[in-house]
Amino acid sequence: MKTLYKNCSLPLAGGQDEKEFCVEGGKFAPAEGPYDETIDLGGAAVLPAFCDAHSHLLAYALSLTQADGTSAATAQDFIACAERFARENGMGELDLVTIRNARTLPDSAPLETCLRPLHIQLRSGHAGLFNGAARRLLGLGENAVLEETEYLAATRRVPLPEGETLKSAFARAQARYFSYGVTTAQEGILTREMFPLYDTLLPTLRIDVVAYPSPADYDDARARFRPTEREAGARGGKDGTNDLRGTFRVGGVKIFLDGSPQQKTALLRAPYEGGGTGMQSMSAAEVLESCRFAAGRGTQLLAHCNGDGAAELFINALETLSPAARAACRPVLIHGQILGDDQLERIKRLGVILSFFVAHVREFGDTHLQNLGRARGMRISPTRSALVRGIPFTLHQDAPVCEPDPLDAVACAVLRTTKAGKRLAGQEISVLDALRAVTEHAAAQYGFGDRGRIAAGQRADFVILNRDPLACNAEDLPDLRVVETYMKGGRVFPAE
Image (cartoon, rainbow, N blue to C red; front, top):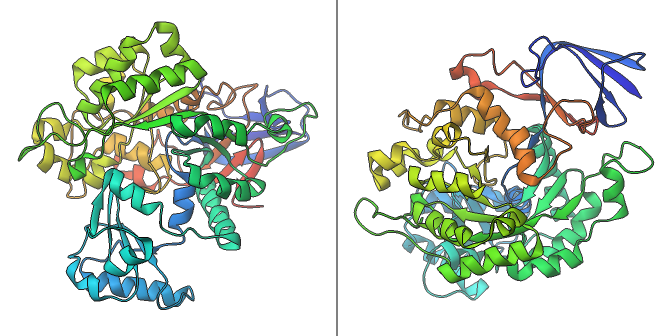
């Protein structure tokens, strides 16, 4: 089947006059007739589909089974939110309810008399609260509020949905990613507890997923989730069919060097306002060991580094490796909220890819100004400093912290406006550079040479937008929407 799409704008195409493209056998092909079908797009803007540079697909799916605490503030608000959610979902009186997206954690004292087990998670995902009933149910200690590694360990005790509930949530999550134009998603930390869940979910997979376990779990994950014949076929196999099923592969390893700047747990080289330099999750020796592990396996290394202190640990370790070892692990620094210009110079020399969580500007920018002071707070997610140095970078949303919407990341990178309306000027980038960060550069981060561009021979993953992002005013960027998403030439959103 050879299809010509005509009368469209291609903002990322090399030639400004290109108004059409061709799809054949799940790939872009030269626009040379005859065609089996011609589709007039009515002047719509078309981009390559997005590669999700960093998120947590399964956690996002699980978030769809949890109560939304966005509007809750007091302990009574959270109790009411939990009871409403329990009623709507037919839960028992003593079933645990997880409430996500809390803007702040309430006073825990009033929650201690609540009979229902409650787990309240901050929007950032870096801290949470368990009331007395939940702590007794899960076998936790006396502290109601937990942060970072202690909190993550506690969340692993929370029962996960099973069976059809899990499958339904995962299907909804995939549909959401498609609705945002994403055809390649990331499993940003594949824990051992998730292995059996993915065993159940893989037959339902529609989106492509690249997963990153810890170094300790990497070998077992690789053995368990080997590429299948179906995956080979889905990536342009021998029969040439257009298989719209997704694929799952282990793409590398993930390590965590610190926490988050909004919790004052990101590791800094200079103290926060009010003192303290944050939390160090790994020793220098452990970071170096992880780098050597990834290089030895010839697999990619993702490193969670929010603060410049954590980045310093990672950079120092990479400088210890040989150039060949660095190339073998294709290092990616995830988040990069606070980075010095001196570090960016070294990052460029080392060939590190940066993946910025630029929505921090909107979501936590006001807090960063308080915690970091004006000089550091103004330059969080220093995209322009990376751009002028020629450092390759991507933009991500870290779902479920934010919706997995790359166009939202684009708007944040261009506008850099906080919730209070403050503009963190100086690190903004152009719409064109932001779009490249979520398409071509995001594909390159994974080492995918077959997607991220609309060009002959590339996989036909593309999106149709409601307007041309290069032609609209900057203040209108938050209104950009995906109208249709195509994967290997077949429409995946809206669903057929």
